[in-house]
Image (cartoon, rainbow, N blue to C red; front, side, top):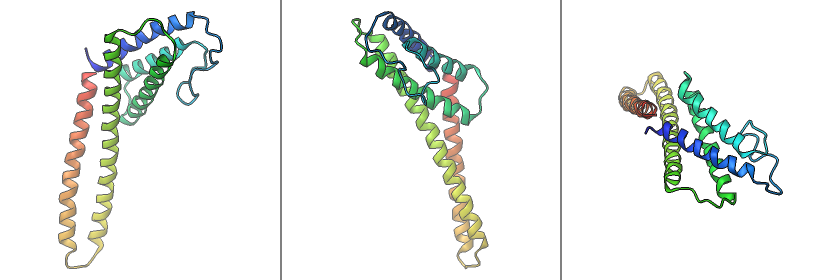
Length: 179
């Protein structure tokens, strides 16, 4: 089963658990379960928040989004998954989740962490590429005797940086294809 399929399965199981929680009459249940910046949903029903996370996952899987939009959506989905996991830990549920559910939750967390790390690494490397390009422009403006040597060394570093960018983008594409 692919990673997004596993996440979809986990969210379906969380939805079932949330429905059971919502059926229980819990005194003092919060009006809104989560911070308004994390979920657009405003409901006393935990199930509604799981459904929102499922919609975000579906949007990620089936929409033609740019890499920046995907990065933001993966980040938001990751934060929502963490918040939902905390909410389920804090709710008194008589039935303990099965080992499969626990493994799925761990897998989802690992996926979101690895995708976040890849996108962060991509962003950092792109920033480094921009700084190298600026340094090359400055080196080309200099009339110092070692300016050519410095410019060549910077171009070599820029080449290695672009190779690293290509490798990171390939890893992201591989991760997306597996999902």
